[in-house]
Amino acid sequence: MWYVYILECKDGSLYTGVTKDLERRFKEHQKGTAHYTSYNSPKSVVYTELFLTKSEALKRESQLKGWTRRMKLALIAGDYQRLKQRGFSGADRRDVGSSGDR
Image (cartoon, rainbow, N blue to C red; front, top):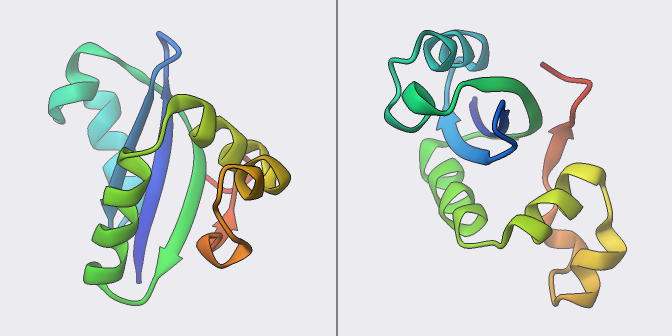
């Protein structure tokens, strides 16, 4: 299984990534071994989605990286009405957790 995840960094920025092992990857981000989070320390995992294949996860990661911050925050908050207003259908939602699943 593959995870697409969104981290909230201590400076308030959001980072989107993909991994097979969410716990290990978050620890790597905390240690500063990933480029972006080496200078923007991660605070927490605020959103996750689970995929069967790496290909599916990478496609979703790419899609989310193209979203505005406002859209990512709506996704994190579960504000699917806002996403729908912006042209994203319920089919785009594949979450298996949110801020409660770390």
